[in-house]
Image (cartoon, rainbow, N blue to C red):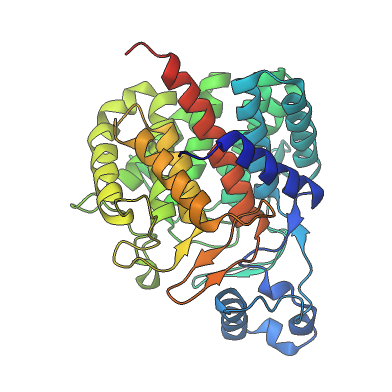
Length: 401
């Protein structure tokens, strides 16, 4: 019997609300008060090793290592998007109140900057220090991924409430992208945007999220410069798709893997950019179709089990499941197999990764379940995914057969 998605969503949202939407994150190990008290915090290799040790530990050692929980801007953006989706599906006042309060909370978390000519910019960062294989981003440094999700929340909040603060902030986010992010690749017809103002790495999904923001805000405001830059960001990623339909994570030698959720990010961003800038549709159509084909073939078992990598089943990660459900729900008109598969992945995730307390487990590994309830990584994403699946399913059922 299919699960009652509304009941699962309500229990999950209530659980997160009781936590004030705060919690731990797979990547928050560098917030350890023990680690921060040592000189190791200044060493790149030590930061990377410590972060991976905490992230990969079979037991959650954060309490032992004095890692405090926190509120993550991307998590708040996802909860905002989830409640806006529920508002559209139900029209209920409670969801409007929740979405408005969350969007306002997100506004308060923005990092304000200035362009060279004195215009305001807005951006968002993570609530933890983060050492990637390529660069270091200290807590609060503006980063394009949380910034893009915040912008998406503001655009949908503006559509729902017509509050000018939201579209104003979305425009300020575009100015952040254009004036404060670096461009590690920039030729006549292509642009790649950096992850943060302090790096020059080439990460495909991150650059494409910047393009998505520019396209969507450009469509609403009529700003042709934004749309032109968005098209160039899309072309940069389109031209780096493999012949089999896949995209690796980035261009550095240490970034050549292919995973489930970053593939989903790319597919959604390309789809949204083409919707906002219709003349790009012809350029993206085959790439998106080929990307969907590779994704469905390599990342899911017949019963809906979501794999992390294209060449291994384990670990099975709640982030892969949630991004898949949301992506399939959004792109279902491109491929008739996507909505049934979204329901299958949701059912599998509920059957295998939902705790009786209402939250979702982090990972299933080959020999054990890692039950840590990570707030941004798992709970926020599953709230958004379930909300989108319910909204799209309701619309699909009303559509003429």
